[in-house]
Image (tube, rainbow, N blue to C red; front, top):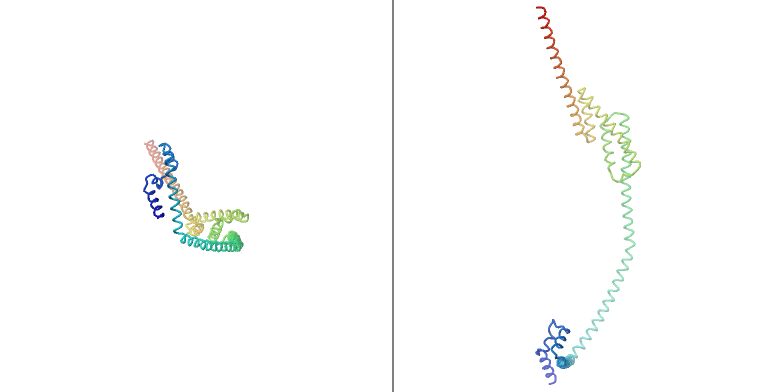
Length: 273
C-alpha cells in the first residue's frame, strides 16, 4: 500500500507542472532561483521542493529494496569483471615489458645493420670513383701515345671523347689527379682539333677525299661534326665570294684597258689624216 502511495506520489510529481521544469534539458538552477525570488514565492517553492525530495528519496529506497538481489548479483559481476580486468592489465603489462625487451634487443642490431649499410654504400662509391680514375689515367696514357706517334688521329679523338665523359662524373670533382688530367686532356683536345682542321683544309685544297674523310671522322668521334661542317661551309663560302669578286674585278679592269687602247688608236689615226 505504501509503495502504491509512493508510486502515486512519484507519478504526481512527474505530472505536476511545478516539478516538470526540472525534467527539461535546458533547466538552469540560477535562472529558476531568480524567477522564484522575483515572484516572491521562495517559501512556497522551498516547501514544495522539500516534499518532492522526500518523495524521490522514498522511491529510491523502494527501488533499491525491490532490486536488492539483482543489485547484489551486479556487484558480484562487477567484482568478477574487476578481477578479469586486473588479469588483462597484468597480461598487457607483461606484453608491454616483452615488447620493450625485444625492442631493446633489436635496437643494437638494427643500429649496426644501418652502420654497415652506410659503410657498404661508401665502399661502393669509393670503388666506383677509383675505377673511373684508373680508367681515366689509362685513357690519357693511350691518348698521349697516339698523339706522339701521330698515326691515328680519329682513334685519338675517340679516346678523348670517352675520357671527357668520365670527367663529367660528379664524384670526381675536387680530386687533384683528376684536375691535372683534365688540363692535359684539354691541351690534347686543342691539338686534335687543330690537326683535324688542318687535314680538312689541305684535303679540300688538294681535292683529296681521303684527307677530307679522315678529318670529318675525327670531328665525328668528338661529336662536333655538325659544327665542323658549318665552319668548313662558312670558310668555303667566304673564299668563293672572294674569288668571284676578284674575278669580276679583273674582268672589269681588262675591259677598261681594252676600251682605252681602242680610243688611243682612233686618235692616232685621226691625227695622221
